[in-house]
Amino acid sequence: MEKAEYFAGKAPPLNQAERNAINALFPVYIFRRSRTDEIWTTCCHKHMTVRDEDMMVTTPERNFPAIMWEPHQREPKNRWDDAPKPAVQCPFCGQDVIVKELRYTGKRDNLTRWRRAVVLRWYRGALWARAYDCSKHYNDGYSLTGEPNSNLVGVYRFKPGLAECTTRYLCWGNDPFSSVERQTRPLTNGRWNIQGPFHANTEYGVGYSVIGLDEVQKSPFRYCMAKKAERRTDKFLQFLTACCFYPWQIEMLMKAEMSEVVMDLTERGVKHATVINWDEESPAKAFKLTRQEMKAFLGTNRDIRIAELYKRLKGRVPMDECAKWLSEDLNIHKTFSAAKKWSLPPEKLMRYLDGNVGCARHGGMRSIDSVLGFWEDYLTAAEAMGYQLHRENVLLPRNLGAAHDEATGQHRAQLEQERRIEQERREAQRLAGQRERDRLMADAYAERKVKLEEKYSFELDGYIIRIPASGEEILNEGRKLQHCVGGYADRHTSGAVTILFMRKVKKPDEPWLTIEMNGNRLVQIHGFKNEGVHTAKGAFAPDPREVYREFLDTWLDWLKKGSKRDKKGNPKLPRKKGAAA
Image (cartoon, rainbow, N blue to C red; front, side, top):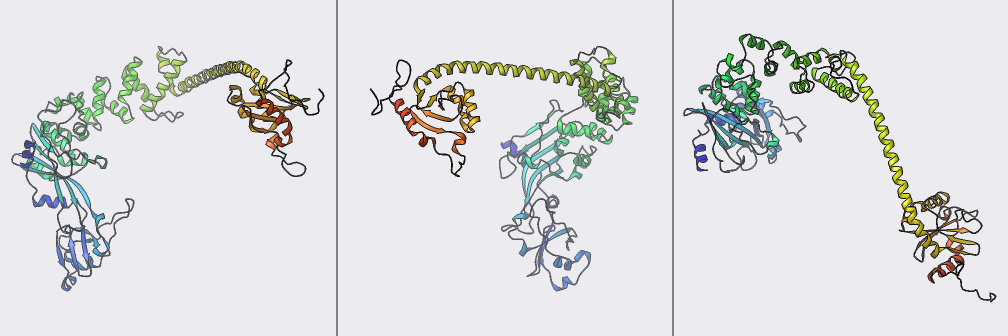
């Protein structure tokens, strides 16, 4: 920890020019108090009272009337509104500024801004980079003309063959610096030891502004075109790390308009080693190409994938043809994998796919990658249909679009047939299972039905109480009488509830009244539509409990006394008074 603090303490402090550059990263305001004719500038840190004689000067350099008369510019209420734009120039430094009237700005919390900056300096034989988390506040307790708060969060030092850094654990406060990380050799494992300083709040991005790019011109990395690289990457510190080990190679690539290769190296750790030898400083040796091949490559758009494809095809295809294929969206990995799977020379497959690009009838074949998708669809269908794919004219049909449609159509029909057969098999299996369940349930219900008949079966005065023969009869009862008893069918057969039918002796199979029992207690009894119909007199049908009270009371009393029967199985009922002995 002490070494890290010592290393950070060796970095050069900010000078005034660097502070001004950090200040320039923030919006530029002129605060005005019209009541006292005072103004405060954030660009050049001035505070003054505008006098009458100042108002008489209207030159562009000292145009105080424009400042005093410019309307207050409001801040956007949300991120979709347009931000205020500078409307006038500062009368001291000439910079475009936004005018704010103090009486309209409130506590000015909405003017607080944060920026991230990396400041470069050639200092004591090394290129130093200091990372700052910067903020600027204008509310109470802060000066309207003050400089930004700059919190040092990372220190970097770059020399040929060595890159060092230390960063704070968090990007705010005074957390201690972590241990010093060093990169002492070229990239070997695909990841640089030197990483960016802004680890916290990465959801807002990890980019930063670079200040002092001219200082790179004083360093050994002056030819690495740092200004161009800074515009291309948000990992500039990793770029400087790469410059410590590959300065000549980076210079060569940047000047050859191949900055994408450098960005791959710095951002992703990809070296494109099949094409570039990073240990060589000579362009001819570094690219692993002959002079004629290098000339041909430089005649293309210089996409490194062109050279990689050329190398992978071992020079069997001209460089310009490789460039053409890549311009038509060739997916190198997928195409080589397909060629290997079907034992085809890769260049033969690529030429075949290229020949089918732009098929007028099949609009989806607009690039080599899309044609590859069509071809793989065709092969999937052809293999399933038993095509002789060992024959080249079948594997690579002359009219791919027509062959694709024919094979996929046959395959689709086959799949539909298989799906239909599978559905029929599952339906037959389901019905067989349902029949088996019905049989088992019927067997179980047959035993239950005997016990129910012994307990509940009853006949008196032309009425009978009988047991449903099956769950289907209960469903039919619900349909005929238009009430909800059908929903009780499964529960009745399983023994969860008990459903009984009340019939007339002369019509024992005609639905009339339905009864639900709980032991010896009558839960409910209903007829057609639960008696919810109007009679001729306009009233609802009477309650069956009242209409057939005498019969029901006799039956329920018999149940409570144990459902006793005579030898013939008829219910034993008490004799009525006055009946013959």
